[in-house]
Structure formats: C-alpha cells, structure tokens
Image 1 (tube, helix red, strand yellow):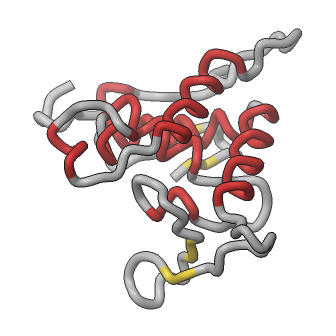
Image 2 (cartoon, one colour):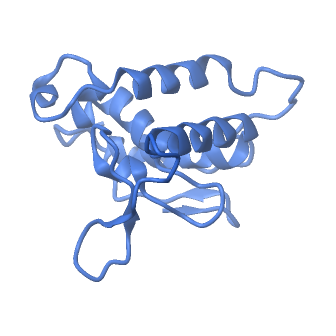
Image 3 (cartoon, one colour):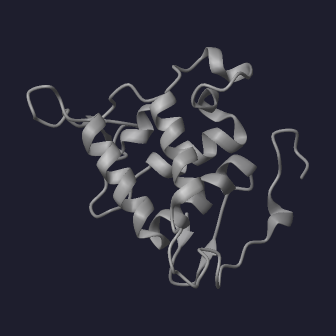
Length: 158
C-alpha cells in the first residue's frame, strides 16, 4: 500500500513487495511512466475487432478486483482502476528485480510456471532507462521515507 499523503511506502515486509510498491510511487510521480503503461495496457487488452477485452473477476470472491487478463505472465498485470494507475510497471518491476512471475522470461526456478512476456520485460527495462530523462530537477524518491531494515528477502534476511 502506498500512502501518498504522508509520502510513505508501507509493505508486508518482503523485498518483492517493496519493489512493487516503490514502482507504484514511481508511476504516480513520473508522467512518462503512467502514459507508457496505460498505452501498453490498452493496446495489449484491445481485441482485433477494436473492442477492449472483457473484464473478469480476480482474487477472492467478492474482492471486487477486475482484470483484463490478456496473456500477461500474471493476470494481475491487467487489473483495472479508475484513473491512471496500473499494475503494469509495479508487477513488471517486481518481476525483474525479485524474479517473481518468472522474471517475465528470465531464467530462474519460477520461470517454468509462467509464460515469458518479453514485450512487458522490454517495456519495464526501457522505462527504467529513459523515463524522466528531462529537465526535471527532482527525484521520485524526494521526500520519501523508506525504512529498508524492515524488508526481508525470500531467505528471511536482508
């Protein structure tokens, strides 16, 4: 969960969750990321006939979460929100840096369970390489309070 008012990232404590939540912060702070992820999501979930892929329920029954599943490494990438937020950058960042969802095609233990998604992987790598490369004088981390001592790796230590 990101509490934007207080500029804090709160997490359950895992490193993969920390990457995921930090990416949400970046998407909210850097307009180029939000623009790219929304365009990617719309293109990937638009059918050949020009209509959007229908939304489907996701998660526990009654959770209210809706996704447009496409062929993402995990359906959650296609989660729909009101406004500009997506899960494209957050799940992609989490996958690349923690190896979850098979790293979107990286070779690791989990990669056999998930379909590779090189297009999504390339988008995330490209955004890290190019987003916010302008005359911006601030960092997405300005004013952000992150206590890394509370995060653990999958082995249980930092």
